[in-house]
Image 1: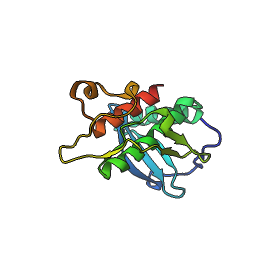
Image 2: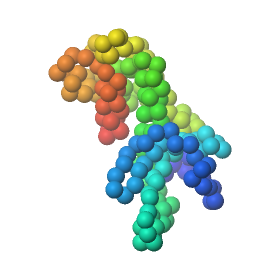
Image 3: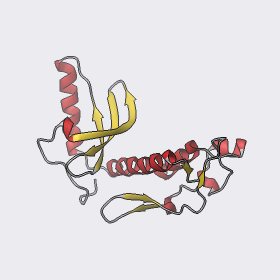
Length: 164
């Protein structure tokens, strides 16, 4: 992980975080985008529900492993969460970006992510789609098939950026 990214001190509890939304879910727990209340910093949190001592032991082992993890992929997930949160905001305003690509994702010195270049963005019409614009390498298949762009096509473009 990037050493300049704020670390959480020992003794922090679950209630010190505000859940923004669920990212993933599965048999081994759920993953959420959360905000650490004291600092406002965004993190990705995995919550594991356990029924017995063996489940608790497995969860504790995973916690210990994650504390040792210093992977660049951890930072990628943190960036991904911030991008999705930004998209969630513009989509809640009825705006589809239409040109999500690495060149339009800016990482500030403090580690915060900002979306830029809204020159091709559109407010969705009453039909809930916009005409096609943007960089073809980041288009979802439905853009080619239907000739329309939706909120979901922005999310697809973010996925391509993360893979790159």
